[in-house]
Image (tube, rainbow, N blue to C red):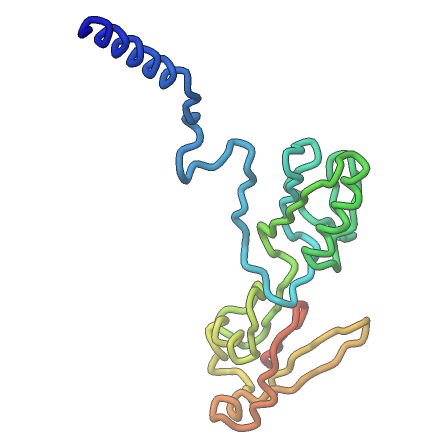
Length: 208
């Protein structure tokens, strides 16, 4: 009686080992934290809440699993970008979400239910200028809410020869240019703080 029992046991063990060897094994690429080979690089810049796409901005357009429709592009002065198969697409003046919807509509002609991602890689269109009697005149990126006083600080502050009571902000909106006055001494002393306006892209601060 013992011999048959031994035989059955050996056969059962062999079947169990065979089943284990036949079971599917997880692929090496499925390790925790490992990114699939075709996953997009979602690294981008943090855009301001009021950001709209402008000339010289760099965008990455990713159509999931469709490399022929994906590209990294720079916005041209006319506000257009060139995308594979879609040719010229309007981007300037749109938010990233509005642009994404526009690309999705175009991609739908080639792909069923396309999944489109727009990543802002560089913001080069939002700039302000400061000129005149400051330590470091020039063009500065406007990537966060910035007041006149903060921009002057970035520029090293007024020089000893500056007329700090007659600083102005030159602003153009819809083709109309206006001049906002800024008295550095008043604002620095906490007076008439309404002069310390938030700057807009394209503003020029002049320190005579």
